[in-house]
Image (cartoon, rainbow, N blue to C red):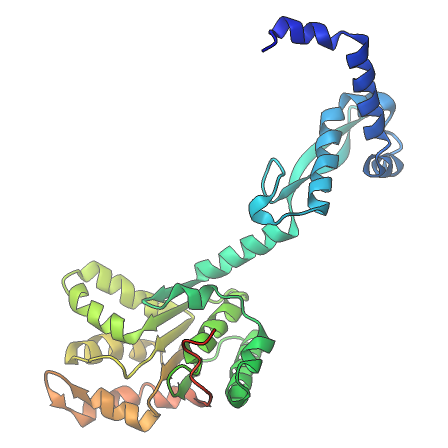
Length: 317
């Protein structure tokens, strides 16, 4: 390895100077730098040569962006950002300043991260929330579900145009027709407009509540989160094993708070009248019709029923 003295000595050689001058000249003739000079004729040779490192970074970043290998493999010094040059006058003389600006891919990632922060899931497969959503694909997978898809799309559009309504949707259909996926799509689309959302997989949630009873702070925080979020989805309601405490003091409390305030959504294999029978029965107290009716009185008046037809998509590639 050369010593520092040898490196410095080589830098004094005519060959090294010629090569440095050649690189500097090529840089100053680069289309980006010529464009900069045309925009700022006050930039003379001295100012430009004083800022060769900034010019080199500027040209290099833009070259990398032209051949972008993707955000994860971004070769720029500051991943997802490129160099921008600004010219300002300081004490009457032009000065070049460099700043880093996010590229379109980085901006898209930031926006997507913000969207995900607005959406919280309890026991729902994260893949359902993180998939790329394509309206054409959603429709084309099974044309029999087109009426339901149109109704969900219309709800999203109306909310974006007119703001949040206290009415939600009750999405019912057979297994694997895409009910959860459509609700995740709704959450994702409305989170783009700043709305917060929670989706809860009911069978696992009810089981976990039995443990949560021993942790009052966690239970209170969970219930409060579900009360206060803009959009709440109870996924696969009717598939859980209810007990009186969950039905009357947790689910009832959440729905009692949200009705006439914020929309609640449901996916279920049950129609509404069959759901009432399910909510009337608990493993501890048996059938209590009036309690099922009480809960349904906080559900059915505040939803539009969406019937989803289609083929079971689970297990399909």
